[in-house]
Length: 180
Image (cartoon, rainbow, N blue to C red; front, side, top):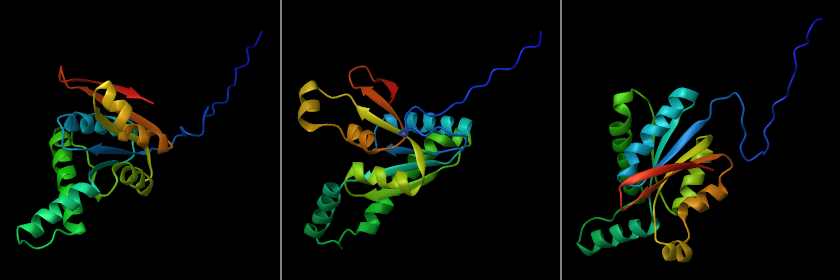
């Protein structure tokens, strides 16, 4: 008796998470926190194993940009330009990427942006054709979570791909990652 090999078709359950054989770029948002290097290192390992390109993004908020510009003008210094703010954010992304990835020998692209954080992250993900985001979010009190909402939640709802979130526990200095 001859057995026939069984056949199966694999297809994504949801179009929100397009799984295919093509390597996807990964975007990591850094914010100048202790979690940044760990998050970038994990994203770098993921990219090394799956292919694709790693994009490290730092965003300066519109409010922070305006405050720095006003402080410079108030001190009689030349104005603070959008280009300078983007370059400063890019320097932070480059520094964190270098510190986290140099020992692993992983290449990355450093990007700086200014504006609403959720919008800038989603724009950069589209611009760099990213299918996966790595984000860090500090643990917050229950009341603050209810009142303020979460930038990470806003980004995850607006992103059409995988999102890995490192939630930091401020009391113990430990973190846990969740994929959603």
